[in-house]
Length: 350
Figure 1: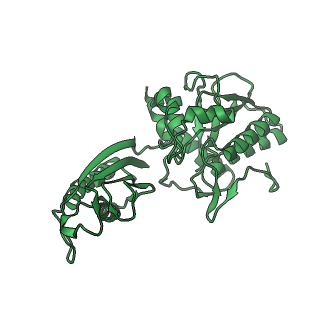
Figure 2 (figure 1 turned 180 degrees about the horizontal axis):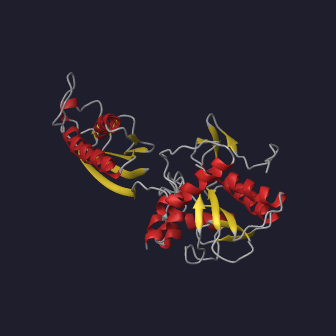
Figure 3 (figure 1 turned 45 degrees about the horizontal axis):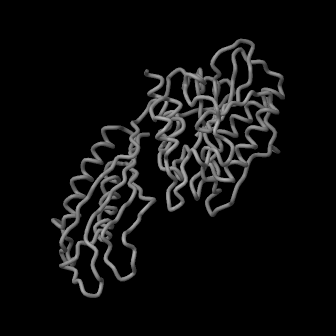
């Protein structure tokens, strides 16, 4: 089988690093419409569930749960060109090759586009696949509000772009025989550092409880601790209150995404961060040249835990054997990105 190079795939607004297509935006609707139209042309029956997850299934000689490929069409605000989009487009290309070569499979095969996998606009990663797997309640997901000041919920935006499906978002309504994704363990937290608002011109350093200064120290500590364990720590959202030029903030709220290849490493990183954050925020530890202030309090909220997952050995072996038959070498890699298959472990085990 050969794959032509002149295929047409969805695109969106260009950025310095790739594209921008936030979940349930107008650009996401365009990509979804392309996916639905293309897979129907390739002989698939398309179903959309209550979370907008879209399943394109090509029938086989026998009935049964389909073996699917896929990923997601939404991106980060500055997303790479080969993130989830590659997983979806590779699945579509599979369908096209099967049609061009007139291949009839024993059982159904298909492609899935999962909604808001990135969690960039609605801040729970893999939320819709989590609903499908039974690990996240539908109501929780539907009421999830977008990041920023917009205040729109997932359900509102699903309705707005026409992808609030009637099918239950559940592995019971749409079971899969297996899923392959061309594409670790992580924990998302929201931290709140509380201090005291003060006038910048009349309050000396020693009298300040400055949550932004404390946050800067915490972020440096997170970087150092993660690096020492071979992990990662990142912050993509930071907000201050009250937000005036000449006022020391009273509160700083920031996201903290920590990742590692093993659960025990991840938990050790978090344990060390909690202990050191407390010392730094309270003012117990002050670097040379700094003025010790009044100290701040730190509150942690766990938003999205996900343990490290080993993929099904049978599926991995299938990929290795297929590569070998084509004379291609293969190697195992650890993925640092959280993807939908992590959420499905709950379904598989239960």
